[in-house]
Amino acid sequence: MDWSHSLRLVAPEELLSVSGLVLLLGSAWAKGKRDARAITWLAVLTLAIAAALVVKPLWSGLSGEAANAFDGLYSGDAFAAFAKLLIYAAAGASLLVAPVFFEKARSMRPEYPVLVLFAVAGMGMMVSATDMLTLYVGLELNSLAAYVLAAFLRNDQCSAEAGLKYFVLGALASGILLFGMSLTYGFTGTTSFTGIAAALSGEISTGALFGLVFVLAGLAFKISAAPFHMWTPDVYEGAPTPVTMFFASAPKVAALALTIRVALVAFGTQIAAWQQIVIVVSLMSIVIGALGAIGQSNLKRLLAYSSINNVGFLLIGLAAATRAGVEGMLVYLAIYVAMTVGGFVALLMLKDRDGNQVEQIDQIAGLSRERKVLALCFAMVMFSLAGIPPLFGFWGKFVVFQAAVAAGLLPLAVIGIAASVIGAFYYLKVVKVMYFDEPAGVVVGKSDWIHHALLLIAALFISPLGYLLTKCLGTLAALAAGTLTPGA
Image (cartoon, rainbow, N blue to C red):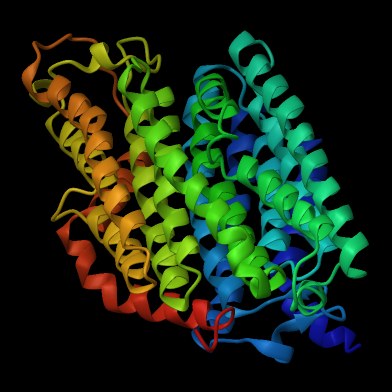
């Protein structure tokens, strides 16, 4: 094994781990919000440097043996690089909006950016995992930090409850995943993804099939896909909003990218065995996400069901089990991250006179008459999440539906399109309240320039101007997808 080659490939995770340890040491001497802000900015800088490190592997389409590290335990290929760029962008945004929120709650501590860095290091291992052992280590590194982040507001009962629920259900999902990995190892004799694929190249045994099902069930929890979605609304509502923004974006990208790699590499020779499972989970997520959001009065719970709904659409691309399907998923993921960041930044900017966050839908009534730009950007996010043209969110749904039709899954695409109409209802409900109801006069608080800048960037990305990026985004997605499905 060439250690120097392996260490070069894992440079982003090395940077994040070492920086996290150094900043953790620095946080021991941090005093006051000024030092906490400085550590936050250093964490953002670390993420920017890590992003720069993965640009070359992505642009060069790095794949195969050149991307393998530590005797096949880790792959620094273009697919992983694409996912890491999205993870770093989402994590950086969640760090930038955090100081104002936590300082208002008098809970801003330097441990927050440190925990985010360790979680991101775990996500990097997840998307680069080519062995069940690497998968589990990365998943648990991410999860352990996430449990603490969910309960970061120690004096807030809702945050503590969210952290406890996430920990208990996360431990259950980890147990299910670990059991599936054990069964897979028992019936294939290896934990390597390529070794598992080779062992399952013939007729799959009943035991190996059970292992496959349990692995997918554990991963379905991590992406909050139905019927393993129950924790999502409660955790999203109870966790601090910057943490919810982080959960809805970065870990979602990591878990979906991991699911793609496991399905197409480890179980790639048994597509027929898992394709039906993915189709059912996809349709359940789309329908439950749409119907569950209709009766919500809390914006964070509504966005939680929206996340479940969007995961269902993303899984349509995986159900296609083709290169076009993976490309569509990656394009959709990039657009989804922008929509999620924009939605939660807008939510953080909804403040009352005392600077407290406004979360109830009826409290933003008539927002368009009091905060025109904020209402416009929030409406753009809602329309884009609904997939209404000409906003860029439409393109994300279009590419996955196109891949499904090309793969012969026309009924799935038709049902998905029909269900997206149901989902449009609750998005339009929010827009209707902002633009047509009498002003509630609640949202009068001001936000800082960082929130305005992030919201503007997200709004421009999901606007019709985003279509100018389709060629570049499609090229990068094609390079990334080609590393997993070279012949598809």
